[in-house]
Amino acid sequence: MPSVRPNIAEMKGYTPGEQPQGVEKFIKLNTNENSYQCSPKVKAAIGHVVQAGLQKYPDPFATAFRIRASELLGIAPDWILCGNGSDDILTIVTRAFVGTSDMVRFANPSYLLYRTMAELQGAACDIVNYNPDWSLPPEFSQGNDWLRLVYLANPNSPSGTMIAPAEIAAIADVLPCPLLVDEAYVDFAETNCISLVAENEKVMVARTLSKSYALAGLRFGYLVAQPQVIQELNKVKDSYNCDSLSIAGATAAIDDQGWLAENRARILATRARMTASLREMGMQVVDSHANFVWCTHESIPVEPIYRQLKQSGVLVRYMLYPGWGDGLRITVGTDEQVDACLALLSGLVVS
Image (cartoon, rainbow, N blue to C red; front, side):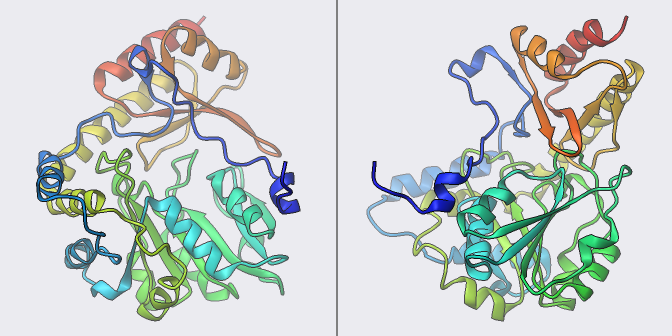
């Protein structure tokens, strides 16, 4: 086998949530997908592109999306960089700011891909554990000579918890490096950090259309940062990192804010009911600001629960974080999906 770089050979790589063959046999509540169909406008827009033909390269900067998104966000289009999902955005930012022997920081537990991004660059990881109440300890804000980038998922995954924008602004003020606020789930929350970008050029905000817009299969995300930052990141991205179908679909999706509001309200109502039911069973459930809930139990191991649910045709995500513990992350699906999951859980955790 040809030799790869030593850091690649040593890393484990990111493991996505289960995508089993015959997925239609399962109630799939393990990867935080939106269980509802996307806006009909998305399918129509993609159909128009297919009909027009795919023989030409796409717009390398996804200009149509950037113009519509800028109108919704109250910023100029040159504050926006588009990518092939928010993972592409994370890749672009990491490649731009982090080199071999540099350091990145992120909290634990959080999105597992952050470690992979750092290891791909040959960088060190400074992992700071959340406090038991899911607040950040002071060391999360402390700088050093090697720190080049800090990731912060907000809302966080797997907990669904949030750090207030004012606290994030204070963190950014003292950090010696960029702070990438990953807002993949922010449309299910009440606050966001977009306004912080104008206040501090070190703050960047990444978003995705996978969750709230039900477009996980389309792969489209974007970054909000000051124009001078976007200009540098454009040098790093792939030349045509968003295809014509995703640009058209994403633009149509954000143009249908009525669909988003209706879908969001439906998911939040189910989330509230789901949280109450799980607590009644004796599960510890953190208040979530996302489209999933994080569950633990004081006396019952949760890994066997995950396996028993899978055997019964319900997929949830079992997650183990060294130095912290484990738990179940359960996506807020449709009412029917959630009811089926709750019925099974009731028989497993209630004596």
